[in-house]
Image 1: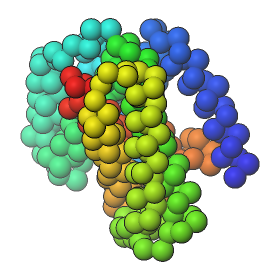
Image 2: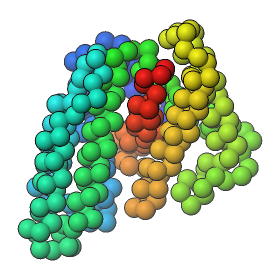
Image 3: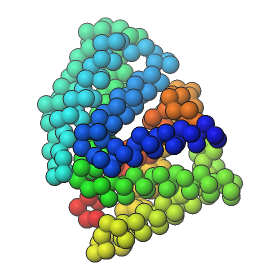
Length: 266
């Protein structure tokens, strides 16, 4: 617990100033997080099968390119450079024929990496763009999974009896899920209607917060399923007491993607 607390304080000292300042420092921080997440995503796959070095290199290159060319700034543009997306698919799929060896690199490996690079890059683009668009809305989006996860843990610890999906995440309970969702929705909604906008209909905010809270928990379970498949508890041990970077932002990634459905109404 002491190690976990110290790690949390150090992370806050790094993250909070970058978030508040925004612009280049925040973008650099996000690029760093993206690279670490991709490394963890590939490392866990390599517990069962080695990824060719060439493929790993182009994975990092496409991650950086995708994020770099799609940063829209304060306008929150939804346009994307489809040349990067086309190149992503072609560059990962063509080697499946050239290698001629499924044990070295197969179509399954290609789609695992295409999905991972695209998924991580898109979420990091949204992280930067939402921050540059509105600091308060960025806080709202990040607040939902943080509050939900915190109260899901506390509620589950205090009154949790019924397992949610024991084969994927043994410690999660239905009571924790309900408690986390309730407090996540309540606190994030109160933040939105008191700090961000008093004119937005409360019902819209409640519906958005509920959807995003549940989606964040699904994201947690999704990444837990990947870890269970590869027989790992955490994606890495980079952050003492917390696991890896992906272990910390798994639910935030899904909330970022889900928020795009509500950006025009709240």
